[in-house]
Image 1 (tube, each protein chain N blue to C red):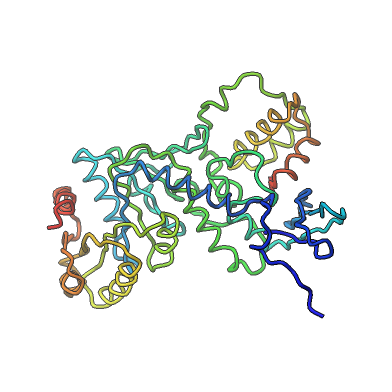
Image 2 (image 1 turned 135 degrees about the vertical axis):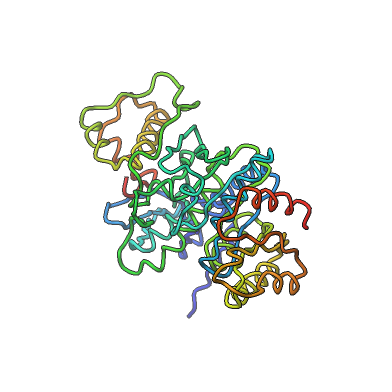
Amino acid sequence: MKFLCVDCDSQMSFEERALPGDGTLAAAFRCPTCGRVVAMLTNPMETQLVASLGVKIGGRTIDAQPLVTIRGTVATGRADVFEEGGGQTEARAGGPSWSAEAQERLARVPSFVRGMVKKIYVEYARDHGIEEITPTLMDTARAELGLEGM
Amino acid sequence: MPLNIRTYHDLTEADASGLPEQIGAQRLRVAERVGRIRRVIAVMSGKGGVGKSFVTAHLARALARAGQSVGVLDADLNGPTAARLLEAGGARLVIVDDAVLPATGADGVRLISTDLLLEDGQPLAFHGPKADRFVWRGAMEAAALREFLSDVAWGTLDVLLIDLPPGLGRFEELADLLGEAPEVLTVTIPTTESRDAVRRALRAAIERGAPVLGVVENMVGGTFVGTAGDDIGREFGIPVLARIPWNPTARVWDALASNWETGS
């Protein structure tokens, strides 16, 4: 998917992605020559189709989690099916802390997907050198990483 | 006056989304996992209710008893039975770094199935827009199949049996994901109706390039009457690897496990 500024005949660059939370997606692209910004807006069905491909508009900034589509989209999953078994990521010491509000918000995530969501936020915080995970950080990460419904 | 717009391939700068690269990375991930598996075999039939899952589970157990490392991927996402058939119902799935460890069932068979993932008695349902679900549901199921192939740490396997639902759709998805059609073991019951449905599916699989190991005739000697196994064997030049009676013993499955290696 590429965007062309027809006036400048320049390929536009990805600027940012936003998930308003209503199932739609917005992705902004900027012309490097004239600075014009256009937004691609997808309806819920189109957003879902992109999600089903397991890809992210604007590219990935962290590695995909195992069974990310299944864990992120199955609505009838068994609550206790997944068990975090540690491994290299978990073994990394000195992880970020969670504010009380962030913990509360995480607790509201369905348990079928909670482990994966937690891991994604921890990795995002680590990658950005952030020591405490807050709801604001969760919102930022969610939009930046395209975590619709998480 | 028409605009003189450059087209996709005229734009040579990499796009930030890199969707083809993301898809390519997914394919590579599948290839890396499957690369550690000696044989990938799809158990298929054009007909529902012929006992594909039953044959898959018991063949897997027989192969495991014979000393092979065996996995079962239940690709019947909407009618999963592998966990129950392999006595792994309720098993938890352990996540380690970038993969999920398969559950371990009877005789050490490793397995993954939506049977393990779903709440008891619940259908496979996805979050998403309620209108026009037919547009995206198939894509979601294909994504689930891809993740079962790419994200499950099967380890080194002698055989991965893939239990397909009736029809051809999932087989096509599987062949696309693998990059080539897998070997096929087909299952029928003796009836003419089953034979005709299986013939269609088998022909399509062969046209896709699938090598066919043989046919298993299931539910023989009971209510169902006919010669479907022999008919299919003759038409496609493939062996009838087993005729499974009602209430088969372990010896019957062991014989199938032995026959399919020799093609007899």
